[in-house]
Length: 250
Image (cartoon, rainbow, N blue to C red; front, side, top):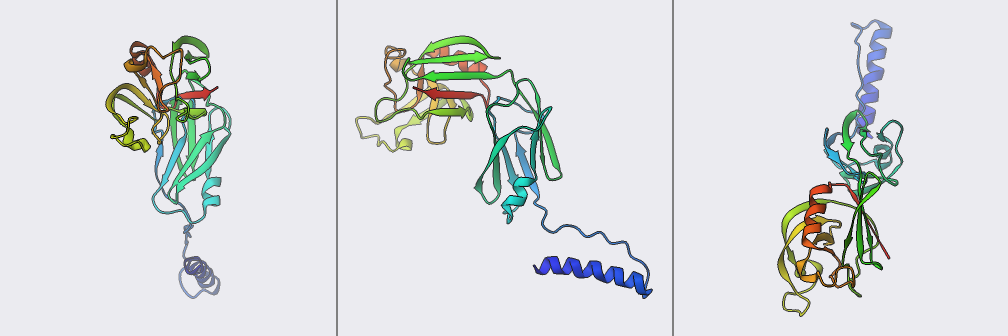
């Protein structure tokens, strides 16, 4: 409030001086003290991502007026794109598309006076059917490969919904302690996984699983991840991009 009053007082004082001839006329520009400074937007300028990629906006300081900040966000392609907004904390705002972004298209993001543009790929989508034990991959809307898969076993079911690929790892350590299972447990594990794509921060991945090949296509035996045969997992790793969607259902 004090900051706003100080700017208002300055503007009135300048006008008064000019009106009464008490000094030289001064041209003053009053800067809005409430502008939220954007420190970064991802995807970054020129980056190519999948058609379910969210937009993450990081502000340089905590945002005091979230409604105003949200109103400053506009995401467009040839037309305005619908989406939902959510806050991770006072400085990070995410925009998630309603449905999918248009494939092979430029996506423009404007947050106040800050603008950037990234592009989408052809659209690599995956359908994980926990009842049929299949993982079906389509590229550009055309089914390219149906892969036998194994998902989460009873009590450790793979969560349902649509999840954009968050990260990719050629190899990664899987440690059961990260999902609350001690190594001393009969369910515990500590092993190296290959060709892995993260779907959730809670530890759900699509990955190669040579140890469950006999169950893939027949039964759900994992701790929540989507297990694929090694050769198919390698193929998916090479073709999928960050932001490509995986839809899990029964």
